[in-house]
Figure 1 (tube, helix red, strand yellow):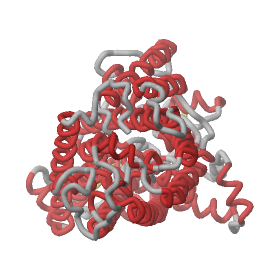
Figure 2: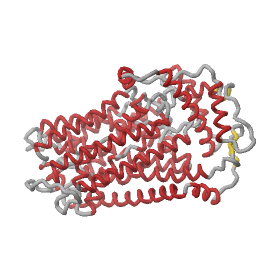
Figure 3: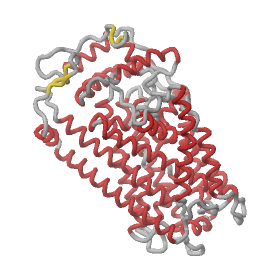
Figure 4: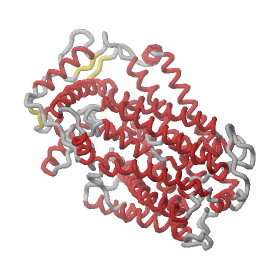
Length: 607
């Protein structure tokens, strides 16, 4: 699947399973040809068979890497943050890998007598030895769990909406919801990690979010997920066009704020133009250091907002966006704010809009497959995820409560545009513009590639992106993509509610609903296997089943009945939350247009 995540681009560029040096291109192309067998259907059990072998080999390789690296020092840690990564050299004795393969097979996969895994040191598969194939496959898999921590944090962390969420929910419900969604997002990440380790291998690498569903539920599920991913990324770019249009508008109005500044539509067009010019870059290499810097820029932006709260809220922005008049005493609430003191709506609708922002805050799970594909030792991913989630959760809670305590019902989303002092506001807007422009380019890169591969290439017969004609089509479609994103953002210029809708419809699905669906299918299929009686034959590429149908699925379910029942409950709960979130956002958007607070394609800024 031609799907490149910001993480991939930030680490080294290109396919995470392919070496970047030109000298290995020919060999890599042949490896790619033997990774995807189009002449037969690869079974779930075959994916698991080769995944078990790969995990054992990675464990051994990681032990050798740690021994060769020696003890960690401040110097080599800092150097590692800015390095491009170095693949481990292949073991001089290829028998090591073969011994591991056979050992894993004998211990985990043989049910009774049967043919053993053949030695893989000979020449085959287009003249490539097994050891050469593995070396090519792992050439760019150099990321440590510490690097992945930075990339997860870069992908997910976005605290500027947290104060507004607290303003709609109150202290108690706000802390409770951020805690629950944070814990459940970690659980979803844990599911993706376990499934990745169970299905990814050097022979059949798992490269993107849609690949999870292809291996569990078939091609139809992957197409559905990929289309949903493309739509989410398009709307995410639209949100960034809208928010940065607001930033440019604020900067253009000057310190007095009395004049309208640059026409708001023109502000969004400026950001759109910058986006599709930078969007012509199809791959961005050696940006690992930028992922590290991005985390600290986000923290610096949050600190800037916290410093500014002593000057009071931005009353003008709140009145323009939500119609709340200035002059009321600033109030905060332990529970849900009463009617008239929450800008997100009245009662249940306002609470749901705050919930949508909390959901949006933890979005990022759709990139986890690509992040794990970059890792030297994917079994360590849980460490990266746990540390990142704790850091992100602590940042949201502290920042959200701090700003809400000072600004109360006048809290604005995003918080940087709720700064009252022009000089501080402008500094924050410039920082935000730089970081979000990079994010928007990367998200448009992924989104357009998914659309191109799933629709233009597969359905309409467009050429591959690596061909000259494909590159011309790419250059043509990038402006079209950004124009569509601009039209969506300009048509619905109400940032908080658009963010809420995207969060409820897509972020919630990719972070909670889809992982629950994946867990149900993966563990029932896995537990339906009977180790003593069933086996995979690597010579004929066939798996010997003892039964099929309902009896098999029942056995798989009943092996972990409470765990599977919880995942079904989790899946249904996420669907209900998605429906309620969509309802509240759509209802709030309807009221905003009816009251003329939001105006499509208008020169008047919405803040």
